[in-house]
Length: 451
Image (tube, rainbow, N blue to C red; front, side):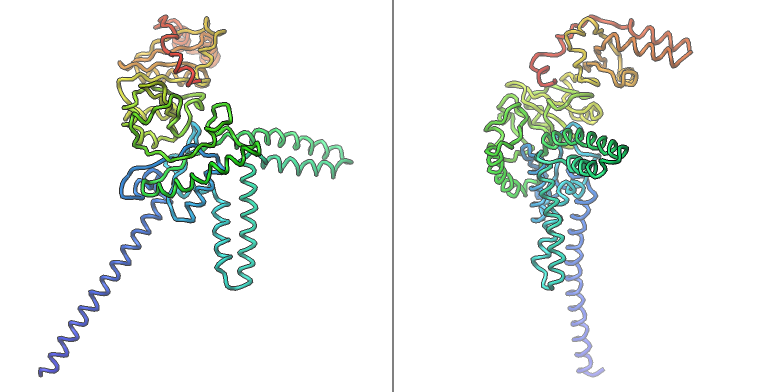
C-alpha cells in the first residue's frame, strides 16, 4: 500500500470515529431529554400526586396554600397548566381526594373548562389560516362560556339543577292542556328545585388547598396575591363566602394569603383555633378519630399526614394540637402517630347521641380487650353511634346507648335460631361493664372542636 492510500485510509477512519462520536453524543442528549419528558409525563399522569410533587424540585419539601374556594382553586390550576407548573389539589372534606393516590392529571379535571379555553384561545391567536382561526375562536368561546357558568355555580349564584328546573318550568307551560304531562313536569320542577338548593349550598361550602414543590412556591404566592382583591370586591357586592367557616364574614376571610411549608416549627403554631390540615377538624361528623399531641410531635409528622386522603390539625392550646382523621385511615396513621397519646374514635353520629343530655341515663360502658374484639364490635354496631377510647395497653373503653344494644339483640334473635348466638347476644350488655364517667374522657375544649 502506497503512502497516499495509507493516509486516505487513516483520514477516513478518523472521520468515521469523529462522526460516530458526535452522533452518539447527540443521541445521548436526545435520549436524556426524552427520559426527562417521559418521567414528567409518568409522574403527572400515573404517579401519586404527593410523589410527583416531591420529585418536582431539588428538595422534597412541599408548600401548601390556605383554604381556597372552588373557583379560586380552578384559577390557580389553570394558571399552573399554562405555565407548565405541577400543582396538587386536595378537597377540604373528610373524604378528601376521591380515590387513593390520585394523579395530578386527574386533579386537573377540576379546572377542565378553564384549561380547554386557554388551549383553544392560544391556538386562535397563533392560527394564520382564517378558517382555522374561526374554528378555534368558536371553541374558545364555547369553553369560556362554560367556564363562566362554572364560576357562577361555584359561587352559589347559579346551579346546574336550577338550569334543569327552569327547563321543566318552560315545558310545563307548553303542555298546560295535557294534565298527565303537566303533572309530570311539575314533579320534575319540584325535584330539581330541591336539588338546586342543596347544590348551591354545597358549592359555596367547598374548600380546596393547593400543594407545590418548594421550587415553585414563588409561582403559588403570585397566584395567591391575586385572590384577596377579588374577595374584597365580592364582599362589597355582598357575595363573599365565609371562607374560614368561623360563622362570620370578616377581615380574616380576605386577608393576605401566603403558602405554608410542611416543615413548620412549634413556635409557628401560635393562634389557638387555627387549622393546618387539609380539612377543618370541625368538618369531621362521623366515623372519625382524634388524638391530642404536642406541637413538637405534630411538626415531626406533619408532612406524613398529607399522604392521607384527608386530615384535620387544629391548635388546641399553648402546647397541643388536635388531630382528626377518618376511622378507615387509622391503621396508616398509627404507623407514625405518637404512641404516648390516647386516640378517641367516634361512631356514626360523632358520639353526639352519647353526649346528648337526654340520653345520659341510657349510656353504658363496655371494656373490650383487644383489636380483634373491637373490630367485631364495630361490625356489629355499624350504623350506630359510639365513643371509644384506645388505651395504651391495647384495650378499649367504649360508650354506647343501651337502647342500641337492645336493638342489636333483637336483630340477632330475629335473624338467628342458634342458641349459642342468642346467649352471646344476651350476655353482650352485661359483660365487662364499668362505670367510667364519660366526662373524664372528653375534655371541654376537645369536645368543642370535635362537634
